Length: 64
Image (cartoon, rainbow, N blue to C red; front, side):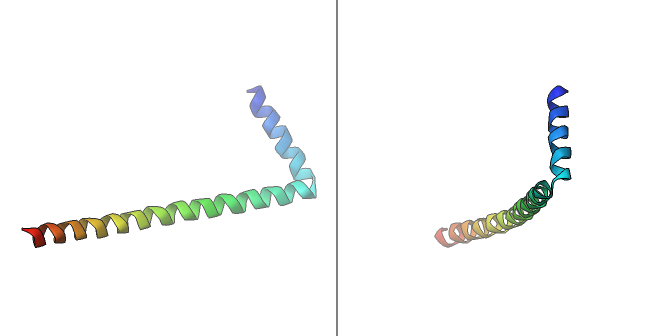
């Protein structure tokens, strides 16, 4: 609990300072980019999995 209060106190101090505000804005931007990349990679991984499954099925059919 004490650790959480210290973090909250530091964040409040950062909000008072213009430099801290810039830091928070950059942190939010980085978080948004990371979230967008994660969502994009999840979709891309599904497409790659489908492509390899299709190729595997085609190769199995061609060999048989």
